[in-house]
Image (cartoon, rainbow, N blue to C red):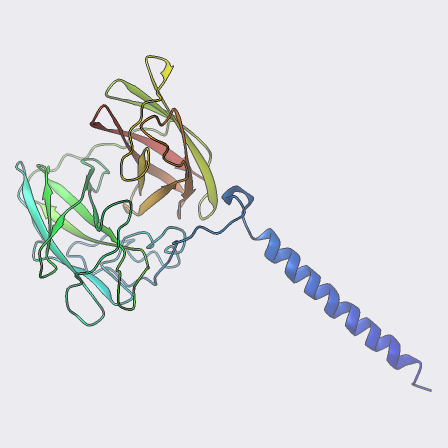
Length: 309
């Protein structure tokens, strides 16, 4: 009496399993962003984040779960995956150029001395004050013992965060991108600067920089930057760090770091006026963008505030 029923039950079970499989594949496909171009970004490695051991660490330095959208995380930790940024300096003097010395210690506790090239440099170093002013992007030098020296321009009083961006070329972290940071205090009376309102354009050294795109937090989006001068398109951009423009961003409130990857290929000394970038910003709110580009052998830096939804 029950034989006719069994095939029906089995059929329904198979249909349910098949439907679940199709739904699973559909959801997986929908999870990939169309704005990212439909392909994975090579070299976008992400490490787990430890809590910051910086001497004056920001309250939001932990930011759990926010280290998977940009290569190396958001940079608000001094140690990731056994690699640690160390420095004897927790305070620096104001008003004069100063050398900031540091090492990157590996999982074994010894300074790392082997680093891979990233945009023509083995180490990128950034200094930014807590109100996102005073931006400096440097390429420090390393001694044979693994001690790096970043020659900073004069700093103003306040709290500063020092970022290091690097890729080890050996060891457990070989080929992985890291961004580590520590905070330092510059003694004196600090005057906080209010972050300029969000805008899609800014001026620097006679150039106008316009940014197009509306990125959403935690999602890959394209950004387009257009550079003009006196209302005319700029087409004489020179290569800088193996690209026509270098773009970094810092989040208002916690100074979270992001490097926006250029997707415009270098083709001689005639770049511009339009440059494209892969933007993946971890947190909503205001981000301060710093665009660096070179013309006639002179490096220009333009800054604007971008609102991320």
